[in-house]
Image 1 (tube, rainbow, N blue to C red):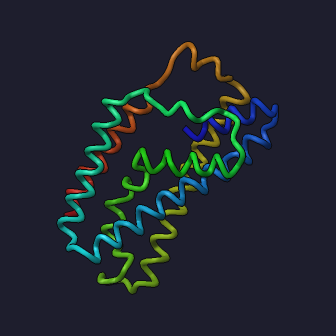
Image 2: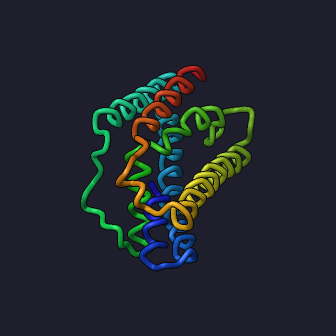
Length: 186
């Protein structure tokens, strides 16, 4: 939903530049959430073998998918549409974490062994993990930015009153796919 915040900020400020600047704290919050998840997975792997960590990751993804379906369209009301950059970064971090964005990288993280113990030396696997996170966040920002610019320049937010694509449901299906991919790696 970062695109919606970015488009709203652009429309409020009547500035595409403000829209594009809003993407920076959104990216920072998203990347922090994913980084925290990667760190958590690696710490769990120190405490347990890969099998229980893999099963726990798949279960977490499946439970998040169920939560997305059950709580469809229930979003926090405490957030307004006027946020300072640090508040926007915090919102992005909280939403990315709550929606399981970092967990979607679970199959990949299991495959690279960031903490060592694989064919790759630790430093190389850290570089691979950092690059994967950066590519993920960059892709997310390009997609969110493109949607936000299209809404800002051409569509407007009036379409939200006329119809809505249930992205929560689509995300739930993606989480199920992530759970399946995690189990296939095991």
